[in-house]
Amino acid sequence: QNLRQMSKDYQQVLLDVRRSLRRFPPGMPEGQREKGLQEELIDIILLVLERNPQLHYYQGYHDIVVTFLLVVGKRLATSLVEKLSTHHVRDFMDPTMDNTKHILNYLMPIIDQVNPELHDFMQSAEVGTIFALSWLITWFGHVLSDFRHVVRLYDFFLACHPLMPIYFAAVIVLYREQEVLDCDCDMASVHHLLSQIPQDLPYETLISRAGDLFVQFPPSELARKAAAHQQAEKTAASTFKDFELVSAQQRPDMVLRQRFRGLLRPEDRTKDVLTKPRTNRFVKLAVMGLTVALGAAALAVVKSALEWAKFQLQLFP
Image (cartoon, rainbow, N blue to C red; front, side, top):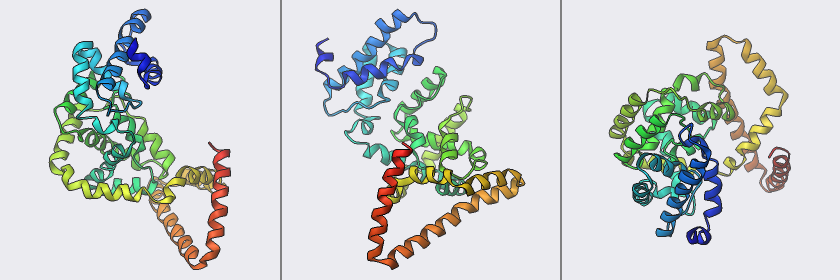
């Protein structure tokens, strides 16, 4: 009780644990769940944080802890989670998400090594890697409904390099290649598809494939590309991705293009999807060229654009 009163994370942990009802065995009496496992889950989390003040709680950490609690019980789970928190998931427990973002940035280079076409499509859609964030920081515990699959993946990740979860994430995307390529090449469509992870994946096959990719393309070989991807995401334009998406969806020509795409043959539709981002890229380059040529006048344009963006973002939060 004293630990709960002293912990700065108690209220957030309490909220997260109360929202994690689906992670507990079905059919368990509510009283047993609330007075038993949920209380033990809170105790484990707060105890690990109290023993390791350098660690910072993050939303999703409870999904990892509850898996160990359900399998091995409170006493052993506390020891295992503490060891895991200072090793495999240590990067997620920093005060900032910088290291977590860096790990996510390995995703696209892995995909590029295996399937450049899929990589280029996703880059054109500007989907980023945020769809895989919950996969990574919960070791897929938050997104898989079958506890057997969660436990199998935890066995795999515990026995492997700390970056193995991002290789497994890449394998899932590669497995769904055709679904992605059949999607409209825009951020909203691709992100929605990838964030809805199928529950009937061939897990043993994907686990084997992830292990193979780790051997073929070890992190040391991908580090430079991951760093370059991280640097590219720091551009100012990335700040306005959501704003650009909302604006594009409001344009009448977007509606017309969507209707026209429905009348195209499959091969023509694919061509339209793949070539549209290239046109957009040339437009962006032309705008950049004009901005440089205008010089001082561009400052006023940028200032006005920023003010308009803020106004639009208020309309579309």
